[in-house]
Image (cartoon, rainbow, N blue to C red; front, top):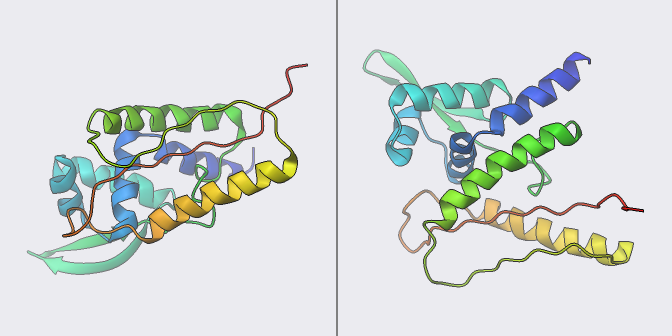
Length: 176
């Protein structure tokens, strides 16, 4: 395994943690410091700093700004969504993608427990379609996910609602 593959697996594993998935979601809307992340997610400052450092070291976050606070420096991190918001970051093999999906599943279950009334959608299908239909469906889902990432607002912004969206879409092996 070369260094590029090791870096990709490291990035994937850094995200495969429910708290880190929440952090990435929050940092899509605005840059935040460890103190702000800690307050929003009810974490200790040390815990928030640790998770931010892991994500930053894996290349999943950028430091948007730094400010001097009480003799120290507070970094404000931001998650910049890549071109394909429907896939985990740089997956390498089924085993790593399964680990990412397991972390995502835990996070989605947590979110479902907090669901309220309002427009929603839930769907599951395993079927056969033409390649053209498949490409169109994947493009529509990808556009929806990119829209949500691009329009994300800071937590509790007036006039916004707290939402959750997850998607998985993939071609399956033919069980001949």
